[in-house]
Image (cartoon, rainbow, N blue to C red; front, side, top):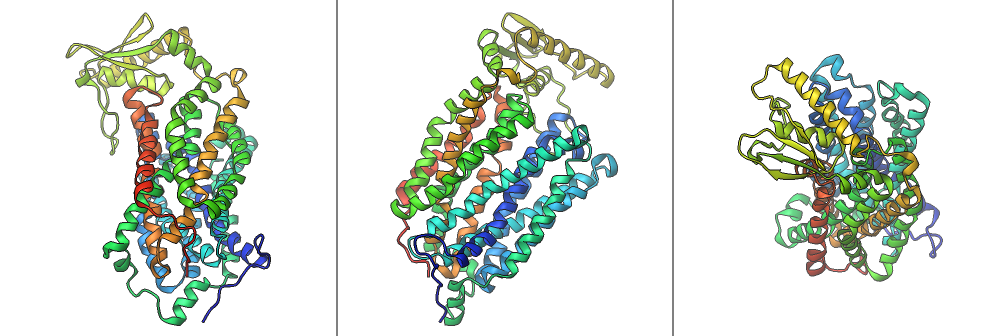
Length: 551
């Protein structure tokens, strides 16, 4: 019968186990390198692949293409999780990293919308779907493989290194983007954005080479030799209530909250700085990178701590702290990153006075609608400018008016106008509105001289600490919740529904909520509600698992 090798140094991590952790973590580096690469370049990608629609719809489409990969992750978890429980952990996540790496790299050679029309976004979405499918099997395999090599009492420490390399992936993407942008200047937005995607070929080659050197998981070999492998992992995982119940509870009471805190504390923070507060993209990337440098070691701290006090306490505490403090933290980021917005909003608050029935939820999944009503035109212009506003009802059929303090700027109702006249009238309204906003003190961009970099960085570090609390122990917790013979399948599904759907759709949902309400903090309601749900369900129904064996 196969035995589980012990590390050469019981107080740390032996050399053989370091190789296991490093090789397994490379897939997570890839995952988050691609995630933040695409997220950071969403505005550039929208211009390259969705230029056939208006700018606002194009940006939403870019976010949806981003989210498409997350939508299919649970399906990848089913396909590759089953494969991992049937034929082995090693071979399965060797397949997933090849698919994942090629899908990322090929984005760098796709033709643009200007070159081939609608084929361009179709190809982009197809690659996002392929990458999402592969990712559905990657994380579960890595976490299972590392945990099954770890000695008792060190699974939190061992698996937390996987979570650490997730942040390394983000950090690597920021470095590559900043270096490429600095080297190419204006050419970055035209063709230089492709370079960071193409660079991933190097990471893929290294990952495949190292993974080919690995042996199979000792726990899987033990099951294989003893004949105790599952013959129907999907049936045992999801058609038997005893295990299905744990899958559901793991989703709602662990990974959903972990996901929104993870995405909220890193990607949404970057989105908020660049898209809402209009901080220069390079400056925002530097701030996030600095916070990551400071916060990353805490993945290990909380992973190791979970070996002593438990996974559950730390993950749920991180969710609770995030839910309680997100709004004041993001308000603090506004105060220190772009105080002019805060000052202008206090001195000259903006209100859209319009017929509620004439205000659309401005999202068109096929890009065919024309939002020509006066309320829509006003809200589009304000959302594009990053200006917070409130809403006030007006008489039915009336033309919307934007109030900037005591100043009124009538909008344009283009419903009955010829296209040329509408374009001219809406353009004039946009210029008039921009001029009045400028007079009221609303900045077009954040003034670098008025950014308190130290305080913004400190607030970002706090968000990162929450991320490390929820993410550091989560792999060990999920691995320990399920029996070995269906572990890969069972843990992969709740992880990827949580991170793929609850977390992956956070940018799109938050963006839509902010555009709908006019409140730049309204989008935070989504992660706050999900995090609180996880705290309640996790506390009441999920067990502590740190002392469970994984064999």
